[in-house]
Amino acid sequence: MKKIIPLLFFSLLFIAGNLFAQTGENKGWPSADRYSFISECIKTAKTAFSLDSARFYCYCMQDKVEARYPKAEDVDSLTEETMNSPEWQKEIKNCLNGFWGTKDRDTFLSECIVAAMEGLDEEKAKNYCECMLFKVELKYPNPEDAGTISEEDMKSPEWQKIIQGCLKF
Image (tube, rainbow, N blue to C red; front, side, top):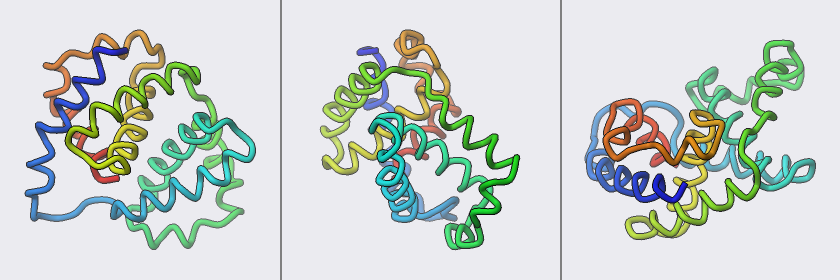
């Protein structure tokens, strides 16, 4: 696990200049809308779940909601009836099934935040690392496998897309 944190930070620095220099089309929700969705979701979800489970669930749901509602303002049309549909209930159940334990998540977050704070302020580092935790956990259900990610892997287009997405928070 400790091997992945410096790699995530290296990749963060590698693409940060490119991301912030981009002047083209902005895809997806604005970061403020993502942050607001996840913050409100976590406030609600942690009344029923542990903080780490609520965090995983909310990042998962934000990803699914944004995929179906590419414009943040369109989420206003999402109703309780829609959320109770079999299609959405399946998505919700998928998001409720986290993979890592609390200790693995806490270790990842604390190590990632310390590394990311070398290039970001604390709030942005925390948001970036929470997003990366969700993405890494989805890709590697076994936390030991996450430690096998190499520096070369992090340079791949797939990982660069993941990292850029997390920098938008």
